[in-house]
Image (cartoon, rainbow, N blue to C red):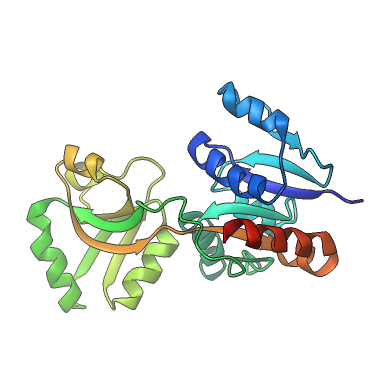
Length: 235
């Protein structure tokens, strides 16, 4: 029997919560649990005790690609990761990005309940931000690690923005990068406060979803069985 490949985020906090969902559905791994207890997590592949699946640990940002490319049949990822991956299809020539997984089988798992996308900046720039919301002749410069989600968000608000893509911390950019505001994930808001920034606007919550490969859904009947068991576990 072919084993189902399950991709879980390897960050310890998310991993524990994500694994617990599969554990409640009857997919346990004593070897993975030992690694979690020992705070090790050097090993990245673990067999399921019932022999039906294999757990792979990956960066949460990489899990959409794992499922999309059929390297995994099912996985758990956050909205900022899978939506940014999907939207790459409109910003690049790789038009098949995100075409091979579905995210609507299960509701939000609420593993990142406190996190949300926010527009933030220095207090002195709040008035300018409000002006940009009313005037499409004014260009707002935004720094973000999520350019496609940001572009979609501001487009819906009919705002003209110049999006600067960065890969590190964005909180320092308004002071030193000629940036009007940042579009970033905020949990407690403490980092913003420590860098002299305030929230201009809360954009959207960060959902965590189970991603399922369309190919696996079509060709592997065991995925349907797993989905049924997961649905009962999540209720």
